[in-house]
Amino acid sequence: MGGFVFDLAETCPEDNGLFTTKAPRLTLTPRGVALLAACGYLPKISTEDILDKNKSDNVSKLLSVLQALWMLVQIIGRLIRHLPVTLLEVNTLAHIICAIIIYAFYWNKPKLINEPTRLRGDWIPPIAAYMFMSSQISGWRSVRPGILKKDWIDPEFSILAFDHPACRKAELNSVCPCPAEAKPGAANTISKILEASTNSDRAWSSSEIGTFKQRPFNASVIKGVPLERLVSTIENRLESSGERQTIRWTLAAQAVSTYPAIASRFVCRETAEGDEMYRWFEPAVEELVDDSIGNWATGNLLRDMSGFVMGMVLWSASMAYGAVHTTAWHGHFPTRTEALLWRVSSVCIAGSGFTWILINMLARSFPWFKAYWKEVETLRAHWTNLVVLGILAGVCGIAYLLSRIYLVVEAFISLRKLPASAFDTLEWTKLVPHL
Image 1 (spheres, one colour):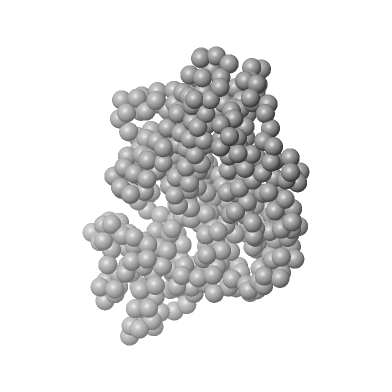
Image 2: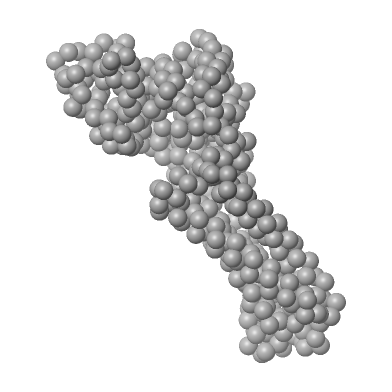
């Protein structure tokens, strides 16, 4: 809970299903909060107000960290005295390190906030409409093929184009270049068109500020999906909302024309329309709002929010987990077979983490690798690649799962046969008060 929300019942009491969601409010994602700040509407909240919502204190956190550190100190002391460290202690050490890192990052994070901060103002409907249409909460299950198709939800923007009349005027063509590889934020954004149309000799009427409309079909074709199926899907989606849809599109267009931070998120495209080129703008698809924000990021959010960086961070934790267990390489094991399985499992976990870090790093650094990986995910790569990668992923996935299970199980069953020195206690630890 917590965060910033648009309370639909309070902000738009007359919407009558304008946002096509059963949720009573829209919760902003981190990207949504950043966009709200760029538009100048992020509320000022004092540190005192934040701390007032916090239901945890530094004393309880400090006691938890000290208890974890005490275990770490005992393990270090045993190593200095050349006393054996049991596998259960090694396994506990891996979780202690994770716990300390989590506490370090979350120390100042308020806990157990039940009620979010409600945003209020007449400016909300246009921005809320734009954020809603950009997010997956406005969409439907994708018609895209692929191994992750259950996680792909196409937002309303994925079938829409923003059309501005100024783009059709020859005198503004120099202001709105439309290169083949256009990128959001470049000189070909709506911001430049709005500025040029304002400075031109002809005054544009309020009805010509731009509007959302159905995207050209040939610009919406998804590889692997028959055009007839795509057209039918789009038409059914557009016909299902009626008047509410028109109002929502009008509000979103108002936000585009009002806030440069929103106008700069579009990419200029060109489509042949008879003998002439039809110029339109493709809206950015971003996860800006949701009906609720969970504690764990879903696959959709990871892909939309620097997912490769997030992937590298998460897999770094996995690699570190395996690396900690390799420290017991020459530890005491009841049998040689158990020692071999422990070593293989530790290397498997650490190696899997390193491999996925490398894959995420390559996808982030090299566009060609990112494009190839996307073809694999959508099952559009050559069938030999899919077969080989599928077998490798299946084998490695099963091996990783079994390795994680074995390390936990072995940590406990190894207690059946310990050396006598494992029961020795460091004398100085009896003199230190601890929990």
